Length: 208
Image (cartoon, rainbow, N blue to C red; front, side, top):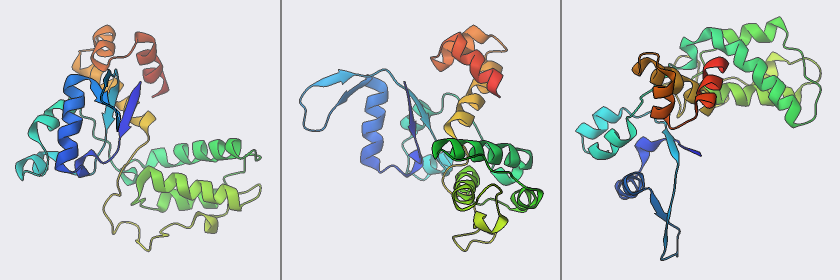
């Protein structure tokens, strides 16, 4: 399976050692157990930390950095992907309505304009939370006031990005395209590099 490790750049030195050992040995030992077991995982890690700088200043292990840096994917913050805002918002509206058994509400032009104009310092997480709140508080139409944008008191455009700028699905799709480019369009080689089937690779490419 796939294990997503968020904010890997904030790991304490002792945990970095343990993670490196797991990645090299492909074995883990449960807390309190004396027996190790094999694991077969595909690790996806994310961070807001500049790991190259962290390696230079000694706060992040160089060997772990190279272990993780197989297919690096840079995802720009949401404010640089204005065209994605409404697509993601509509997805979160639909997903929230389905999760709570609600009728899917309308996303009126005033709300759409508000979403496009905001800088999203919290990236996709902030967008998802804002949309979920508006769906749960609203009725059949979303209201701009229910979005509660800037709820942390951080004016749009005046803060750096908060921890993670994308969903796991976005990272997987970006990794698929990065692997395909690295392997010069060879889908079999790209799938092998990622440790996934060709069918899974095709699905990721089709969803992009």
